[in-house]
Length: 339
Image 1 (cartoon, helix red, strand yellow):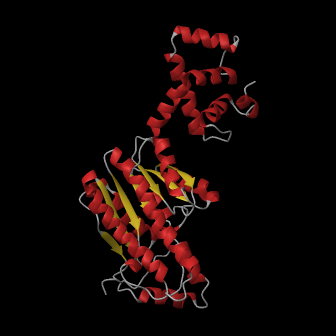
Image 2 (cartoon, one colour):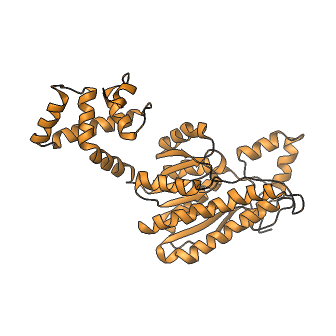
Image 3 (cartoon, rainbow, N blue to C red):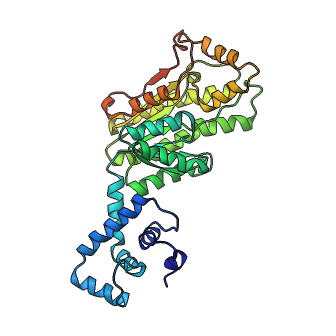
């Protein structure tokens, strides 16, 4: 008995075929099983008489959709399965969204999926992957790939994995980021490296790895989620301010360097937004209502932004309808930087 069959002996034949094809034994989605069944029916019809006779000899007379019969079909047709799977997954333009397990990144991933992108959501929290994937598929289509972008080689591996699976990369949203308090004297080297390392360095590495693949397929778009803090310096957050200001210049540099190759880059600069992190900070304050009032009162709009508003700007920036937009910032801050 083949090793794959022994490991998956309690699974259905179609599950076994899918597991061998994907190189893993796991519980597949119902639609994946249906796809495998359909593919096998197509492959059976395409086999010539000599191939059918050879398979029959190898099967020892097995008939019907037995595990052994389906595994033999897969042996003869594995390349065709890979081609069909690839073609099904790459009909839509492919977009990577980092920082997609919560807040603005998660809202943007779902909204992009609903606007015709195949979204590859990425984040640290592997345990949230199933929920994020379900949201993407409810809105459109997509998947989750966990990644710690601060690890050496992680940005490049994420890009390579997506391109290997889908054959292309059309868009990238760099949203992964962290926040630390501290002025220039108070901020430790470790805190500086952590903030700049994820917010700016990882974004640069993602762009660096993504752009050649975008160019190879006719162009693409990069949306860097910066901040109003990249435009106006906020007190006691020097590392964050610098990292977001750097993202603005990264966006502009990509725009001027790669516009001729049809790669666009746009920054989205949110003001203080009611994300789960901000909501938790407000809830944990001695006087939550007063803290929220203070956050809002510095803005002419006198309120905080919503994740949906920021996600809408990201979707707009990524839209192929605005090909002339590149190198600029979309500021959504309730009028703060204008006042």
